[in-house]
Length: 304
Image (cartoon, rainbow, N blue to C red; front, side, top):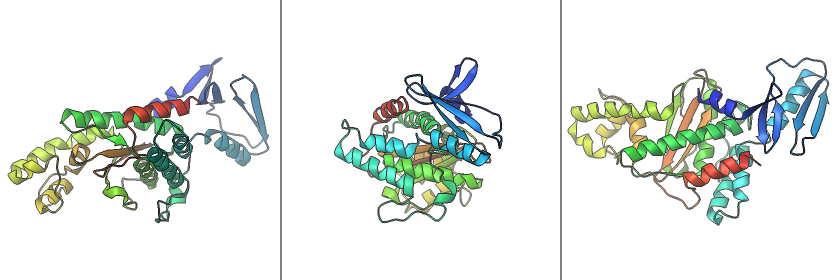
């Protein structure tokens, strides 16, 4: 499972014990033991190999302390990091600031937070889409998405910080169980795919076979494979799997040649084990980053 792999990648064995990496030469001890109600001491090594000790008197305070330390790096703080990078354009920094605010408040422009925002979005929590580990995990999905697009002749997409934030919030919405589109944010008319329990790009690409069958059923659909026409009822039926057609919408959304920007998120607190969300839009903006830029900045941020 991707979440487990990334969790392992961000940990280190020191003198036979496992530690989570939270920054350059900074680790938090990893323990599977339950916190006891008696006092608990936690140590965090800093870059000078000194340590910070915190003693708490009960389980609730111990959990709060560990949450505070582990949540210091989260998707919102990453977006704030992007906003501070002078190597980025003013438009890129501005979008990153908007994404940071969206992740912290659930509000986008004049649109207030959804009623469920505080229930499901737990900024920086280990299994949350906004955790450092799950943000890192989503990069592989972004790379897989662009690779899949390139194989069918569709352009590689840039990464939108705002679409990334929306994908994270929508991924956290999957904590309720099952797979559900919140259909709340309407940013740049983006189209959304959700997957749970399976590698998302692979499972969405399998719908290409469904599309081929739909085209055999109705040959007029052939020209719409990469350029959707939602005013065409047959196309809508085909992508939605209605009236005898097979569901092909995840595939057509992934390879859509009108799209210019995307965002993805990975969340590991779902009854299927994990969930992935992809949002893409045909409305390009100057605030997006190339995937190479985005990946490089994520790694720089993680190693601070």
